[in-house]
Length: 141
Image (cartoon, rainbow, N blue to C red):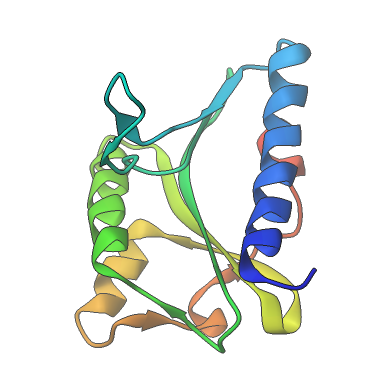
């Protein structure tokens, strides 16, 4: 894998496989949100966040990020997604960010409330701010 897009596609392809498994085995329902476009396909607005997965016992709402740096730099568009996810967290659902730290091949999870708390003092998230996301078994089971 030589560039960020390939890494991002790898992470999203893994999530898409999990969603396909869930949907095909009637374990719940998952989907990827898409940006808003007009009838000609012109971009109008970004998606509120990346993914939704709902099972009989759990619901997950999350966005995927990646970085080749030692931290994930939070951008203006990310704040909008965080605020959307935080509204979902306020309703009692699991809303979080999955961050792929490419430099050490770690997939980490941080809930949106922690990100927003950290943003009051700095504009980036370090691996130490997160917990390890080992695999997707927790979502499926």
